Each structure stands twice: as C-alpha cells, then as structure tokens.
Amino acid sequence: MNGGTDERLNGRTGKRVSIIFIADEQKLVKLPAAGIRRLARAVLEGEGQFGVSLSIAFVDDRRIREINRRYLRHDYVTDVISFPLGDGRDDLFGEVVVSTEFAAREARRRGITVGEELLRYVVHGTLHLVGYDDRTPAQKRRMWKRQEDLLGALSRRIHEHRENIYSVSDGREIPTAKSQRGGRNPTGGGGFGMNSRASGKD
Image (cartoon, one colour):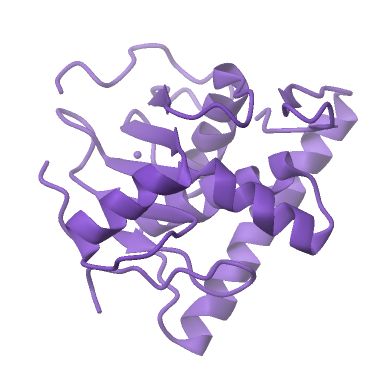
C-alpha cells in the first residue's frame, strides 16, 4: 500500500502527520474513526513515530479467532493482535486487530465502559508495534506502566479541553485522544485482563 504518509505537518512538532486506516468489521460498537485516529497518532508520536501508516481493524470474536488460528496457530478468541510490517513510509508500519466482543465481555467483568477497554487495546496493540513486549514479568510491568501513563495523559488532555468524542453503542461515552508486508512477528496482549499471549516470538 503506497502513499500511506500524509504531507500535513503537526502544528506542535512540525513533523509529518501519520495516516491511520480504520476498518470497521463489527456491529457491536459505534466507532468514531476520527477519535480513534487521534488516539493512535498520539501514541505513535509519544514513541517518536511520525509520518507512518497504521491500520486498525475492529472485528468480532469469530474473525479474530480465524486470524489467531491462521497466523499464530492459536485456536481461540483473543482481544488484540498486532502485526509489525515495515517502516511505514512506503508501506504499512503495522496492523492492529481488535475484538469488540472480547472488549465488551472484559468491560463487564471489570466494571468499566466498553469504550475504555477498546482504547486500552488500541494503545496496547500500537505499543507492540513500536517495540514493547510483555512476555516476561519485567516486560509486562514496563509495558503496562507506559500504556496506563499514555491513557492517563490523553484522558487529562481531553478533560482539560472538555472534549468527549468516543461514544459506544450502549449509550455511555468516554474521552479519547486529542493530542503503525507479510504478517510476520504478530504479537498479542497479555496480562491485566487480556488473556492473549499470542506472539510470533514464542
């Protein structure tokens, strides 16, 4: 996929804005594409990635199980899978696949909104693409801290600007951000309510 980068510049950094492709292949949650793009860009920029291309697909349990089985040889439903692909300048930097059904179940179990859980999956999957891993206890702690720090910072910035642009189909709303060939080395979530240890590095 060529032409993935955007020649627009970030007014704060002066660097190129990343392109975020959204694929909505589910019916459970209403996905405001603009809000998700802003969240993903904020995570990428926080990790020093500018002007790259990222694809995020929101799917149901059946589809993510198919992907998990086909690419990772894990025959079960999971929450989020990441596929690092390239440097993102000429082709996609990476792909993140999220199950909204998994998020809905986990949100009920934890007593939080579906939107909050989905935001966590987007951040988690994107962090995998920029080099974070969670296969050891130390790696999990480092990734968890970075993930929650990013979510907290993004939520505070939205609260300060009184924005609320992420609404979910159950009528509840949570804030989202204001402020990446071949399917190799996919990685999945682990710990903190994510039951997936899917990883091409296993």
